[in-house]
Amino acid sequence: MLYITGCDESASPFDYNKQIVVTGMLESGRMIDTVKLLYTGEVDKIASSANYAIRNAVVKVIGVDVLFEDSLVYDPLNPGRYHSINPSKIILPTKTYRLEVKTQDGKSVSAVTTVPDTFSLVYSSLINNSTVKYNSGKTVNFFAWTASRLHGTYLPTISSLDTNAPRILKSFMRDTTMDPPPDKIGYRVGLPKEQTYTELPWIVLRYYGKTRFDVFAVDENYNAFLNQFVTTQGGELKEIRYTVQGGLGVFWARTLAKGAITVNITP
Image (cartoon, rainbow, N blue to C red; front, side, top):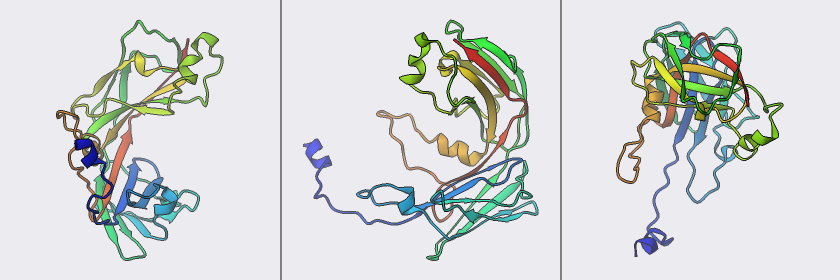
């Protein structure tokens, strides 16, 4: 009975309320690369950025406690993307910025983020620019960094710098062909705000080649957005909390630690 009730297509229809969805990130020391704006879609329609992209909106990022204003430009090759074309407009650490969006149909949204302070990697059990033999018997590698400020948490990140891993022995090919690695893996989201170290399990490194370890300090907006899964029976996700006024989504900021570690992993 529960199955039939849950799948009854004749159930009462709901009202579709079109809203603006914001996905935007500021990075300390860089121009504004992407603020993506889409409309929400109806559940019975095919999801497509091209179909729901917001075009010709007025999009600005304005400094709250710093002299800054940048009008973002629409990218016709990437539906919904707006970006900066002014190389002098660089995002600064510890500063607060406001996003303002006004669409052609008169809708407006806004959001505010504060950029975390600069910080550095200070210790790694992996030696930078070294060649490391993959060792599944070793449980972890250890990394530590100085403290940032104005952050919500730290996001350690593993990146593969090779488009493919050359010279992989045939006996290891299954690792990349059956389960190809993503270009970038963020892990351990939800570290305690004060924790300035992490242990990297070898299981994260399921591939070979040039590999980079970074740490980002991310703001309170992104930290709250990523950590909304409440541990309940059945893994229920309760109502999502957004920090965008007048819309949905997340507008956030991050700062990359100085001193990234790069190693070449061999089978």
